Length: 163
Image 1: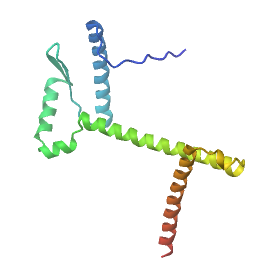
Image 2 (image 1 turned 45 degrees about the horizontal axis):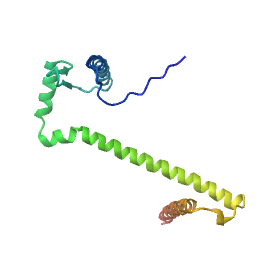
Image 3 (image 1 turned 180 degrees about the vertical axis):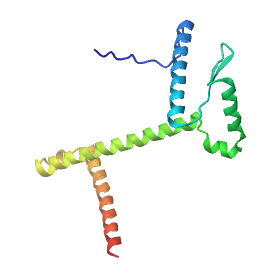
Image 4 (image 1 turned 90 degrees about the horizontal axis):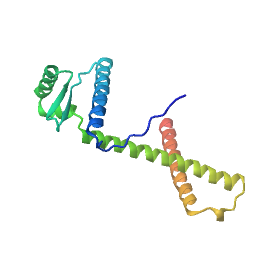
C-alpha cells in the first residue's frame, strides 16, 4: 500500500522544537541534493543557511571550501559575475514567464479542440449554426486565424522553393 504525503502549508511553524527538527531534516536533504548535483554535473556548489534567531550560519560544504569558492566568484569582474549569477528574483521571474507560456499553450490547445468539436457538430452532424454561442464563435475565429497563418506560411515556403 502506497501512502501519500500531506501537503505542507508554507508558513512558519509556531512550535520552536518542530521548527528546529524540520530545519535539520530539510538542511540535510538540501545538502545531500547539492552534493549529488555537484558530483553528477561537475559544478561547484556553496550554500549559506543563516539562522537569525541563533545568530549563526551553516556554510556548506565547509567554511574553508565555501570561503575559497566565494573568493573565486568575487575575483570575476562585476559584469562577468552579473552574467553568471541567477538571483532569486530572476529565477522567479523566469518561472512565472514559463508558467504563462505553458498556460497560453494549454489555452490554445483547448481552443483548437473546442473549435474542432464545433466544426464537427456544424459540418458533419448538421447542428444549426444559430445555436453556436459567442465563446464558440470566438474559438472558431481564433482557430480560423491560426489556420490562415499556417496556410500563408506554407504558401511562402512553397513560393521560396519554386524560385
